[in-house]
Image (cartoon, rainbow, N blue to C red):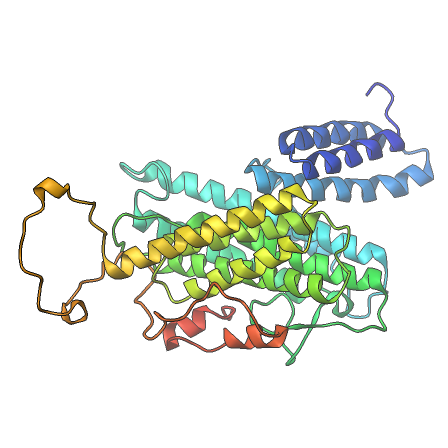
Length: 418
């Protein structure tokens, strides 16, 4: 620390990456702070031309790591106001930008700066709303406050759409049916064998990182409510948007693991899939009777196949497969209890009265289904479908879920138009 060098800063970065993949996220975040201090000392020396060229690149890598760790830990720093927008405007590449590794790293740095600014702005807005509200301590105690914050987040998410619109064409993933990249509309990916593998990997990593950040920003609006809440349209819409991004992220990783080796050796893909699984399971558990829930359950099956592709030698992957199986069982039990009502506990045999059996068939008895789903009614005709079974070709499971359940929900199941 007394006399830092470029190599010492790079060693700090590699240590932080290793610690994060090993699960020591707090230690990884602390290590990036040490690297930041060393890099600040190096920035004061303007004599070395090579150092002047390397320091900005290392700073971008450092900011990228810090944003990833901050999003995972929920620990953000206050940056200068408007810095994200200024960075995006100054270095926005043109449509004729040259194919280069640096373009990818610039886009990742822009994305991370923008996401961190959105997160800090949203937290500041929430604190301001809660300070002026009487009796509300968090977003989940007052549905009106939660919906106001959700509306604010929807406006902030448009900034991410603006970023995705300026990404150069050579960094965009091709989809079948001329579907746009960075979209949650369901269409399989198309790979061009003529493109170098490093370029294909950059495309996949950039889009997966985008969807992963969207999942993290929007999952705060999942709400496990003991009763039905009204007036939470924006909050519910953000929750469905979150599960759309989680489903898209899972589908991309599932297809790539099954068809290519683009993500081979990419440990970050494991974290992306982990984050998507938690979001999918939380949505299905919080909204058992919501129309997008079958899609979330099916995506959990795809995620199980992704972790299965790591083999039995990967202990973290085996743990995730076991966890997904437990999620599926609990979600199925939750859905069954909502559709059939609460199951009474067993009555002691000595207290059971002897009476004639009910001559009326059980199917003729009117049963009220508790309407505790905050996101809508139960779709008709899906009670006999086993959504935990995933089969068919890649195009088949993409196209199966493209059928709208209802007009209202079909608009939410796709990307929201700006």
